[in-house]
Length: 240
Image 1 (cartoon, rainbow, N blue to C red):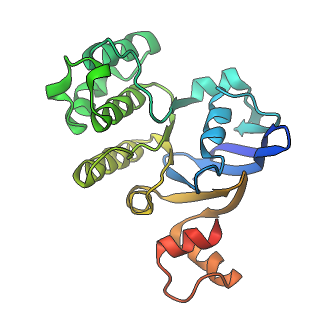
Image 2 (image 1 turned 180 degrees about the vertical axis):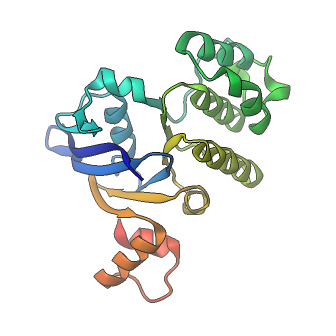
């Protein structure tokens, strides 16, 4: 499967602090890639630099052998930050229709996304009045309607209960199966294992490992940092 994007030595510093230190990774077409790391590891900074929200100090992003500047990346990447309530005075219906009309969103998928994310009964409710979980599902619906082929989502499961997390995971897998590429920052290991094909592990601005669960388990075993039969959580903790 060809790589959609190659990220090479992406760097962001704040004085002596290296928020991103020569980060390199690949994002493959049609996969769900999980970004895993402790608080302060650089996950949000990486997404903001990839999306062009935050200027990187060094490094590059390539697709098809060509370097992509911030403008070109905006045509390929849609970014959903964590903890936002866009257009709080407007209804969910207005926000979805605006996303389709202004950004050229995926109009043909609107109704299916609304049903899949259980938003039908909430369409005429102002976004500012939603609970955390309702707001998270609304923002995810906006992201899934965006036209870019790659979606970056920061903590898409935060605020969801177990049933909702499973339903959202199924929605994300279905969109990946249709060719959408998803790069997700996920805090809960169980959620990550349920939805992701591969993982990028990051700690203190460094990528410490990249691969499938089996590849990461083999890497941890080769380094002698996990016992035989280690759990997924133990593997991730050992490599970050």
